[in-house]
Amino acid sequence: MDLLRRHLFLMICALAGVGGIVLGVTGLRAMPQVSQEMEKADTLYRNLQSLQNQPVNQRRIDAEKKRIEAVQTDHGRIIEKAKTLYNAQLLVPGVLPYGKPVERLKFRDKYGEVMRDLLNSLTWGTRASAADIDTWRSKIADERAERRSEGKAREAGPTHTPAGFLTEAGIREDPRSRAHLAAAQRIYCYALDFETEKTLEEVPSLDFDPVMAMTDFVDAPLEEDTWRAQLGYWIQKDVVEAIVAVNEEAAKQTRDAGGQPWVGVMPVKEVISIRLSEGLIPPEGDAYVGHPPEGYAAALPPGTPATVFTQTGSVDAFDVVQFTVKLVMDQRDIPLLVERICNNRFHTLLRVAYAAVPPNRKIIGKIYGSEPAVIVVMDFETILLGEVFRRWMPASIREENEVRCRDVDECQDESE
Image (tube, rainbow, N blue to C red; front, side, top):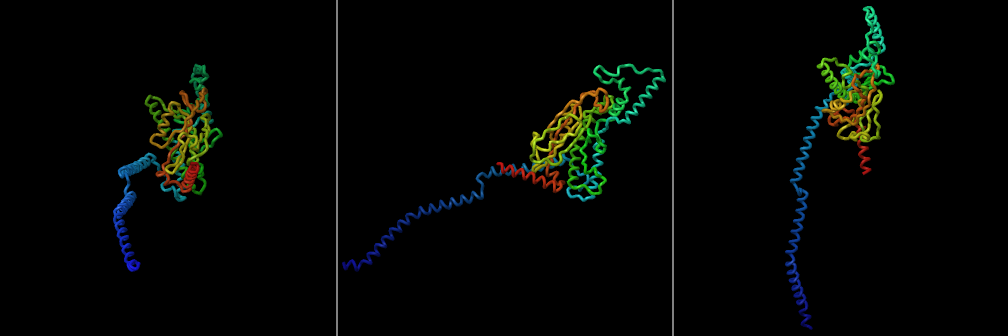
């Protein structure tokens, strides 16, 4: 026992040393496994870092970048081509969007001039007046007196056909028919001046902005009025130029055949009305029933995308304006006129409706010729690319349109 007591401390130290050796050997054996786990963790970390810096499929991303660049290049080319097709120029340079009042006064005068030129390009006219009829009444009386003095009887022949139509002999003796026929033979197209006093049954052919007609006012038109008038002129100019083109072709064919051009041989025989929507077409709106073609009242555009087949309203990239044309024309030439209105322009035909014009048996009033004629109503829409036209758009109109588009987007987001 004494021996154990004397050597207890040494024995404990020896046991501790042996335990330390055992633990050291065990730790040394575990070190390679720890090192491997640390290497795996380091490799995983590097892989995660590489995912942030290098895409998995770089070739596909490069191809997509090239496609985007090609689309952007094509978009630029389209915009440049569109600018040449629109060929839109302000009537007074610098008047929009922030022209001075003096420039807007010049615009009002210029607008009246170009709208007058537009109407005159139709080679237009109206039916005979009461004074014209009185003039022909006197001429017919003189012709009868001359025949009596020469001992000639009234030209033989019936005055009416079995169907009730006035014959050439009947026309010769009727002052109203002679006057109206003479008026028709002087023109290519019936139309009504926007400055002429109208009856309830008559409307001006062109959509003349009423604010621009107030030439007695010393105050300049507002920027918004100037914009609407300028836009209306651009669109009506396209329509009138198309009408003039098809009528001039018919006139040339008539002259080449040895005849005299007049309204009776023209494709477009009367411009009843050309009307534009009150403003830019909103992205959405209520349904609208189109105007029937019968009668001589003005036909108005739908004013909403809800009814038309394109369902197109103003959006961020472009604005939409609708316009309606009401004419009397040869039904066979409707496709030709539509092609001329829409060719190389951003106009789209939305709807066509027409009704037959009753035959004019007495040859009184408007005379459309021997071929059957129709009253046709055609609705169109035109696209105004933002990159072309919004540089001229007044801020108030631009902001109003942006609010409408934003409201529609928010409503769509809520519904989704």
